[in-house]
Amino acid sequence: MLVASCGSIESNDCLITVQPYEIIKIDIESIVFDQFGEQIEKVIRDTLKELKIDKLLVRIDDKGALDYTVKARLITAIQRLEEAHA
Picture (cartoon, rainbow, N blue to C red):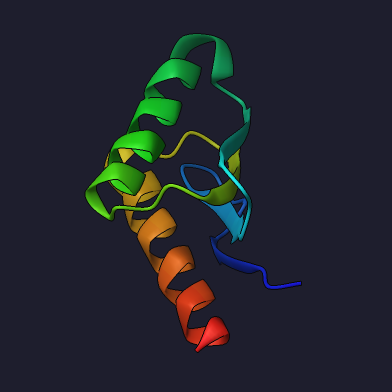
């Protein structure tokens, strides 16, 4: 099974893991989920839309990462998945 990841579980970072899936599915684990869960999901969905990706399982273990960190980690994980798939 193809899986790729990027990031860490250090404070103010996030670990994002992606793998092929039949739809978009996002699993969020976050220390700030109650306050920012919807925003984290929005950043992920908007990034996937920008990249024209409509089939992917995204898992994020968030330790308070800012939006731009979430986006950068997601993009890098997707690039790694594509490289592994090539």
